Length: 209
Ligand code: URA
Image (cartoon, rainbow, N blue to C red; front, side, top):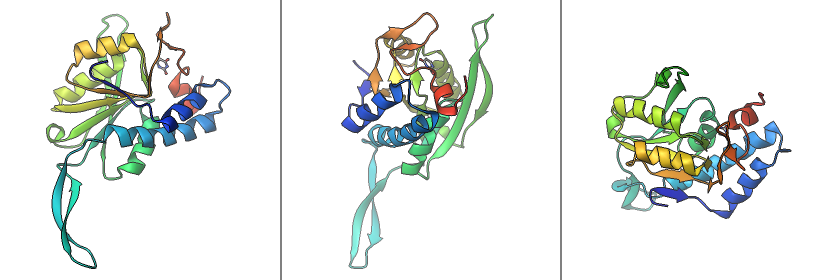
């Protein structure tokens, strides 16, 4: 599928299967989410640009590669996006973090922002937007709208599971934002849940219901 990268690394697929199981505990789900997010982060940053820097090893002066440009931004869509952050920050501890909270007004159907915090110079940074589930796509589309309004131009979207309906909506709204996911599931049910999915990601990681 154009614009969508399915991260089919065996460790990712194995961990995802355990996360899907309904008997997996909150503690287990959270641990797996941290582990899998590290692996997903590795893949979503695979093609970052490098630049050469002069350094001195104990033996000699050399030119060695370092990441080019300003620090990355990980933008978490509240609340479930936070579950992906921890593992990602383990891998890229210098990344800046943005939090975006949006909900859809039932009457106007407009996305209402209830929280937004982002670092300076969004326009000069790669922003990796994270939310475990790309279901209808409404919240991720709205969150990316808000990030673009604040200047973000280079974005990627990272999730665990995506529904074909969500991918379609997302790509119509933001064709310039590549999607990275561990799997594309069958469909959405009448309540907007991904099937077969893993249930409500927020509830599963925080033990709420
Ligand atoms: N959000 C979730 O947490 N799970 C779904 O299946 C869909 C949206």
